[in-house]
Image (cartoon, rainbow, N blue to C red):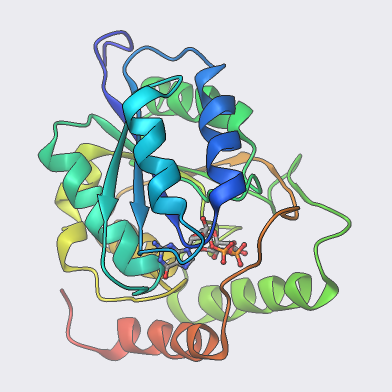
Length: 244
Ligand SMILES: Nc1nc2c(ncn2[C@@H]2O[C@H](COP(=O)(O)OP(=O)(O)O[C@H]3O[C@H](CO)[C@@H](O)[C@H](O)[C@@H]3O)[C@@H](O)[C@H]2O)c(=O)[nH]1
C-alpha cells in the first residue's frame, strides 16, 4: 500500500469531551502523517463538544469533519456510523480511538506500519501483550472488570486475542467491508468484541501492538450497568445466535 497516497481516517466518538477533543486533535496533528483525517462522531453532547468539533473542522491543525447525531446512542452505534461514513468517503485505513487521551496517539504510526508490512486485517493497541500496560491510577474495579471481560470473552468465543476488549484499532477498509461493519448490532462497548469476532469468523488475522492505556484526566467514563449487561450477553449471542 502506498503510504503517501493512503487516506487514513481516525474516527473519534465523543460524548462530553470538550476539553479532550481539542487536545487529541492537536496531538494527532504533531504526527504529520500524510492523508490523515479526523472524523468526530458527536451525540449532541450537552457540554458543547459538537461546537468544538465544528470549530476544529473550520480551522483546525489537520483536516477534521464532524458527524452530528441527535442523541446519545452508545459507543458502538457511533462507531458504526463513523466507520460507514469513512468508507463512503474513500478511507483506505480507519482507526478507532477514544477522545479522552487514554489511547497513546504516538502509536498510530506503529499501527500503520504494521498494516503496511504484514497481512493483518486489523492492528489493535493491546494492554496485555509483552510491553503493554495499564496506568497505575486506572481504578482497580476497571482493571478487574477488564481482566474478567477478557477471560470471559475468550472462553466463549476463542478469539485468540490477548486484549479482546481493546478500543484502539487500525482497520483496513477492505476488512471493514468484508465483515460488513454496517450491520454490526452492538450498542455499547461490546462493539469491540463483535468486531473481533466477525474478523476471526472470516479467517482474518488480528495483530496486537503494545500500548500503555492511560486513565483519563478530564471528563468521565460512559461505562454504565446497561453497557456491562450488554457486554455479558453479546458473546453468547454471537456464539449461538444466527450467523451474520
Ligand atoms: N458519540 C458517542 N460517544 C461515546 C458514547 N459513549 C462513549 N463515547 C465516547 O467513546 C470514547 C470511550 O468512552 P469511555 O466511556 O471513556 O470509555 P472507557 O470507559 O474508557 O472504555 C474504553 O476502554 C475499554 C477497554 O477497557 C473499551 O472497551 C471501550 O470501548 C473504551 O475504549 C470516549 O471518547 C467517549 O466520549 C456515546 O454514547 N456516543
